[in-house]
Length: 458
Image (cartoon, rainbow, N blue to C red):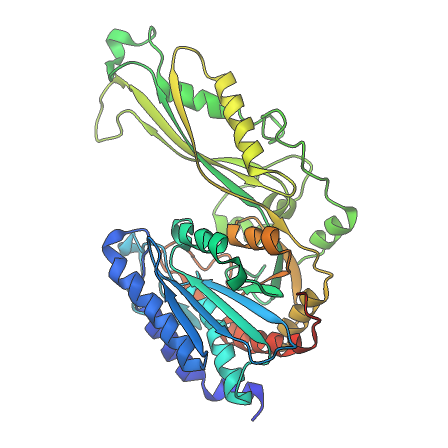
């Protein structure tokens, strides 16, 4: 029986299996759901055993288990490191879901559930593809190591500890994952670049306690106002980040890449509709895709302080807080950027207030040469699986694990995304198009078949 026939004959079984996975509320950000997160880990381990993996382990960590599996039936063929995560974001606000977040529902060709796109649905595509390949040939066509975590939504602390302690167990010839997006519907995409991410928090303290704004206003510093003034000075009129040295390591975009990006089927009109904005903004001199994917940014993510309840309360707040982030591009170093941000904040703040600056997390940017043979094989597989040409894209988001694998092992990282930008990952009514789910299974299975002819990197 041919590959497509195997997949088609198990269409309902794969969906039923995915529904079972999606029903587990594996919310890693809330400790009350610890038993459910662990149940999801056991589910993944059992599914790998059912497919036929001879080695499957649940590795205990200080937080949630890592699932590790290995199947190496072909000594002379490449080894794939397959990565995914089984944890999900909280579903709130619940009232904005059309159907319950952990009761998978199909509407108009889309599967709705928390985790459908990020990342249970996309990771399950690989499980189904492996199942189909084993049914067809008795074993996978290349060697596999599988690493699935339950802490991606909380920063992956245990995953990085595992990498440091057990680097030999994740060595492979390439990394494969699906936790990214396609460009627009109908345009299958392989991501070859991700921005890095530094995340910060700042606390500004003025008076020792909240003060009456009539009695003290005009004579004492207002931390909330000073915080707003600070962020207003962190960009110039051209949309550039106004921090000395911020752009020093940023390499100019090559003309060939700018042409390649300009040729992609991207619609600014559709992008505005997706975001709900009346107009676009950003760094002068760059297209929207270049701003999203290839240029660094500084964004204010949250700001609070003072009185925000019902009615009026005229106070000068004692303290004010903000969370903000910098997205980074090659070859910006996260540690250096954090130092530059800290220095500029110290310079801009007046001596009348005290401040506390924290770097909550850092992540490196990543970019690959998509002309490498493995990327071309992925493109062929996607084109065959969907019957349409595939393209190469970057993404503005961050997956620190990819950059870490690239830095440690210098292997190709192939990101085959099957989500769409408007599928509400992290938001109510998250969903995944069934066309992309089944097309993904066909494409991933073909990709693994094509890897048999790839030269081993190690």
